Image (cartoon, rainbow, N blue to C red; front, side, top):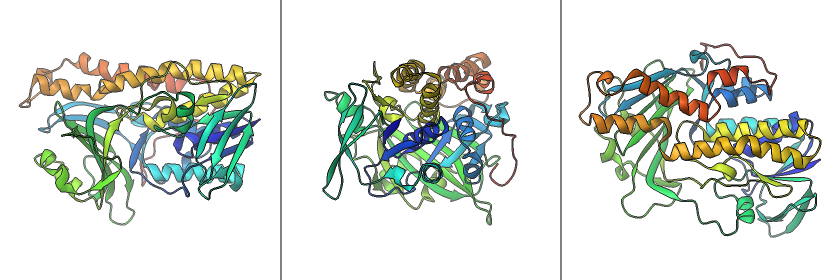
Length: 423
């Protein structure tokens, strides 16, 4: 079976490895960019996706570059603790949660793809135009950046080319641009001294502003940690150009007072050598991902607002589900039907939940009920109310402890908690 994957991001590379794991060796990844560089900032990989990475044999290499997240804490803008919960191995999962630089994850997956499928498996400088998938065959038209063009044929095309997917655009030519929610994000990374236990993810905010901070790498010599941070607030006027580099003056005033006894948020932001601005976009859920021998995966299928650490996680679990389906079913068509039937309802629910702020909704409610802060969270919430938000979201995304630890769709050994260098 010859498979053409469009996009060499997290989803496309994970899909190639999952297909190889399923016995499919004839895989070609088409990447529009001239080169694949370790770009981006931080992201989280939840235990259900870490389990897949372990099955694929890339966990050990990745873990040396990542932090094993121990806890998630929600605070209001005054530094009052709303909710905390253990994460990953600390919570009882058989696999950890990883906080990692996106570039480290992408390069680890890319190295594994080239090692297992060959250097020729990844073709850069090859943006895709038309896509066809009828009559039991599939093809893509490529106009390379050197001006040449070609039609590549195969048995299956997987569109894993992100929120502005060319494959999705070919399947849905009348779809409008990705809608925004009026929020703007500023992103960066900063080398600072560890806060709390050095492995904790912190989300703080009020009814409109948010900041998320978590360490993604530890320096071996200084003990400092590289903290990924994302600050967000409503846009004033038109939405800015995505990915534009900006300076601190652009948003400093909104977060300059957020200094807690144990966390200097303005100081962390100011320590970033560069910071970038992004409107917050997602995509409307689709009623269908698969047309003949063409299907979608990752953000191309279900781009969602960045709540709950689910972007890369869901792309990796998409890849696993597709690889499993191709092993289980006799025909590609049956496998694609089963893949979509499993994954589309889950990701649709997550897209909808994230439009309602996902688990971060507790921060909005806390501000609405106690805008000046509180001395004890029991004045604002009942314990069951807070726990239900977290549990319901984990159930929606299929990353609850019971689901991850007992699901038998993979055969990989649990990973013990490790308190070592990058624990």
